[in-house]
Image: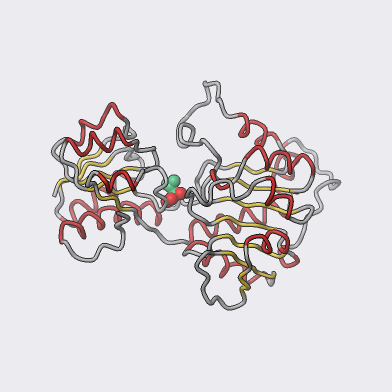
Length: 325
Ligand code: COI
């Protein structure tokens, strides 16, 4: 079985590809180039292609089809960067990967605490020897009503971690489950009941901009929003207005709309055409991180391994829990 991997980071993923290709006896070729219309030809001769979060357009899917690619596996949990419906219509299979939810859940918990305790302001001030207290008074997590939006593996793990803090936990999910200590609410009620919201929903047409001016209007004054899922879940301009009005007291965004050509590149010499990012980053109560919540050694290893496992399952023709279409 021949696998071609795009966007393979030499400093962490490469050794995982080497380890698993030798463990499973596979022929894996890698490039550090991100997949684009210009480098599809590199995968010629490989039936399986592994990618990261760069958008895969329908034209690219057509090109992969024309060179005989059977399956494209993203080394991520989310697959909103691939038009799966179109892939299915032309007979290309799509798979995703999985990794322990701990990395993102722990990062989300950290951002929740940092937001409630004004950590960005604290770090900014202490770095210039301003050791004053005024304006830095925080809130206890135990006093907050947490609204978890999306109770898949990451949302559930975040809930487990929260339980140690004694806060009230509410959740919304289109397919609610029985989770001890958690009250599911319809989305509108969740928005008006809770005062710290953490997003763990996938990005689909029905979830795009689920945080918008109407949902923000329902939230209590001084609410906090944490997003470690997908930037498109939040209407950035509506969020900026809510932050300006003080309706939202703080937020932490590991993801932002239109991040694809920014994360994970060194763009320090470029003029960045992303106004919401510039405005949000400038606010002392907004923490921005570059879609890095997943990034632990364990996750990187799992992402590569499970992407390869999806291809092995496909070749074997049996059950394939990673297959999307
Ligand atoms: C995912 O796995 O879906 C992520 O969000 C992490 C990825 C961008 C590396």
